[in-house]
Amino acid sequence: MTFSEEDYIKAIYHLGKGAQKNVSTNAIAKQMMTKPSSVTDMIKKLSEKDLVHYKKYQGVTLTESGRLTALSIIRKHRLWEVFLVEKLDFSWDEVHEVAEQLEHIKSEKLINKLDKHLGFPKVDPHGDPIPSKEGVFIESTKKLLNEFPINTKGICVGVKDSSAPFLKFLDKNKIALGNTITILEKEEFDNSFLVKIEEREIYISNEIASNLYIKVTL
Amino acid sequence: MTFSEEDYIKAIYHLGKGAQKNVSTNAIAKQMMTKPSSVTDMIKKLSEKDLVHYKKYQGVTLTESGRLTALSIIRKHRLWEVFLVEKLDFSWDEVHEVAEQLEHIKSEKLINKLDKHLGFPKVDPHGDPIPSKEGVFIESTKKLLNEFPINTKGICVGVKDSSAPFLKFLDKNKIALGNTITILEKEEFDNSFLVKIEEREIYISNEIASNLYIKVTL
DNA sequence: ACAAATTTTTAGCTTTGTCTAAATTTATTT
DNA sequence: AAATAAATTTAGACAAAGCTAAAAATTTGT
View 1 (cartoon, chains in turn brown, purple, green, yellow):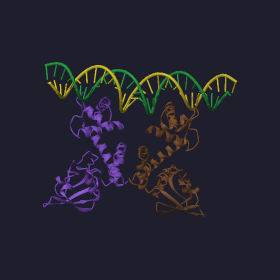
View 2: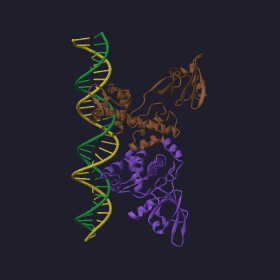
View 3: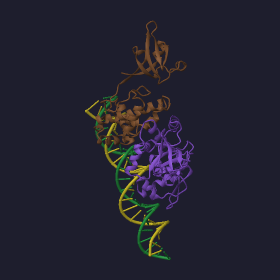
View 4: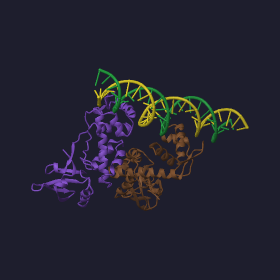
């Protein structure tokens, strides 16, 4: 399997949201920053290898074999991301590009030893789940903090309000994207929250909680 | 720079022993497991990029730029080897193939952070020196254990006598390739040695010492 | 020194993954 | 239900990296 083939499989997986949807040639071309004609060529090759179902003009779907291939690549990508952040001290937003390269390294042994070295993590630094060797993984959802019940544990992944004052507030309170966050209490009176962020407990107003996206594995 | 270009540069470096020697087309072809005609094509490309000096029929030499490129690839290769052995618990002889892939990952930041994570090692698990960011490194020599003076510290890299009894002896005494070895004392009387192998002190007869290769950085 | 052997290069072809331009199929709109 | 628009595929080309076979240069052997 070439790097390019792997990239296409991954793109199709993501565009099809992991499922049965027919993914259009144009959508793949856009994602891969290439031309639709190139996509058609590659689709034919993947189809020959039984990685995608393909009928002319009808878009593609991953076969079961294609789906497992995609999950194996995603597993590698996310494990490397964990490594980069946890062991090499990369920040949350720097890891993607490097992981895009590392995900293509071919060695079952390597990836399983890496998994062990990292303590078999369940999610990557963006809160996305890491498939197991067998391609099993837990789904995750991203919603605003105030939409989750008490005791929810997730990862801070984005903001709804991206104004300077709000970002400044987050910075002042040392709330950063990638931080692990747990909802400890909900205050009935003003709908404020007591949360634990990376070992620190702080109060957060409903105003704040309704502008902070967190990703939670189900 | 493509993977293939990097592989050629590395091959030329090794065949030229890092230095001024003219490396023949045939030698490169053999090393790269390819045909001389393919080598000629690649040489022309590398020459255009000023990575090698090339005159038809005269073989090639790395330019200074080519030499630094080679050292940068070797640095990556050897750092990844240290990582695989020290952190992921790979054995001495399993790492080469994987490191061949990892050495092509493009990220200055990654390799420098990896270097730091590993504690800035000076040699890889085979006892070969790791070039610095700037391409500076210490030379190493491989000789029989009995040829080195007292206090020499090196890495066990091979045997002269590869007969079953000798290998069995090494195994029984837990002396393995890749082990760090220090010469503590030389016994005048019978030319035996007191050595430290991986925290253990043991006596070794001259017979043994003259059949064990160790690699030492100068 | 010159023929034979070896090495190296050239020429032309193949595959992979890409592109442009043209043709074809499907979707949309009136 | 045409006609037009959009999406997709085909055809033909190109660059990278390899190959084979043939030509050219160099080296070797006598």
